[in-house]
Image (cartoon, rainbow, N blue to C red; front, side, top):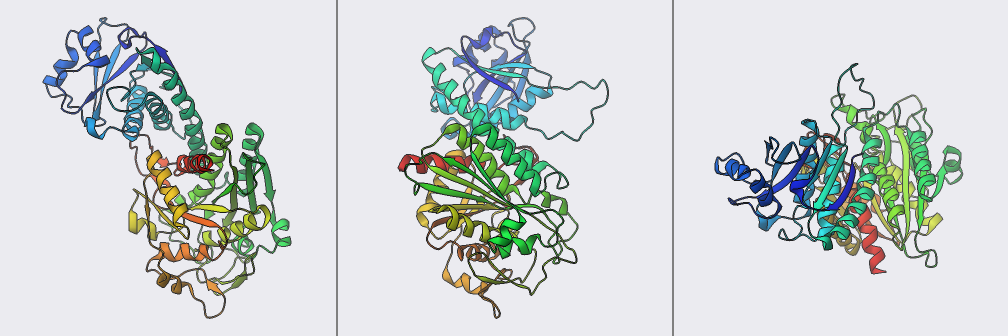
Length: 506
């Protein structure tokens, strides 16, 4: 991972491979640190502005060679967009794009001014955090299984230093970078888990990773296996795993941030289907490979718990991951089967590909009964319907507690991970009625995301509950800002922010 640091000084004197300055859209005469570098380059930046090579639009980059006029070999001028629209999200995305550009041109050591701090309207800590998150996440790449040709050079941006002239801003910038390292580390862990192939990242391996996190952070770990689930009559999880040779695991990481007040708690429950073939209701083969990422909800919970342990909020947090593989075989559950969840509710299996809600049902029942969870947020790549509704831009949010939904939405706004609430009108609930059991596991095509949420709601009596459907946001098709192609790690940062917000309100 790239090394991040802060130093007091003049960006123009930084002895690095490249320095980074910025430009707002519509500015023709650069000022501040950009202006100082422009003067050192005898108006070089003003020249490229005048020639129309850069206008300051968000994400634009122009590179100038200093030709010995500065200690640095190159200067990057990056566009921040309109000054009125600058926020941490813009800085995060611009930093991601810039970091990839620096790495692509072979810069190993770079320095940057603090985008938006001071005249840009961001406080120094927010600027440092956004630069740090954008840089680490924008540089992330999953290359574990790619063999590099002998002698092929590897371009790696090793160091990025924020150079700040104002001494009073150095400490908050450092604080922002420290927080960025923690949050980005959680997201990177989530991305790593999702990008791994399913022949590696099976339920047992997810449990091993959780154990590694527990050892590193001091979190308490509990892992239930098949026999434990049989003993607790967790019929929903057992039905999903019935067709797989890989044993199911119920993984629980606990942060005891307020042990004197056990009711001050929240459970983060992440769907952990390590591969979803659809079971007997098998999926089409096209893009089925993406179903190695059907454990993205669980991955985000493990990543969030790692960050929560480092930040230490005063609240008790349970990170719960029902890790299961959904495969077709002679022992797999069938459409038409009737199963019984841990809380006694009987379920008609209308479609074996609607398995995520089944494992969440038992996981939620367990954390309520065994740990007394008072608030629950579940995260799941649950429905294709959410992609139809919201595309690949926003995560769908639903819940029985408007207070909890509002808290999730506020946290998402703070982190820039876009989310949108869908309605839960009682009329939708009727679609889940069964002629043979208490409930069936699909409500048909209309409002599929909402009826799926209503199914989970059957198991949330007595708790404040919100549901995040990340089926449209767990994977990215291309690099975009701090997001790179492949697993996104959404909504790891929002889960951490939510926990911190609830701790602050207690």
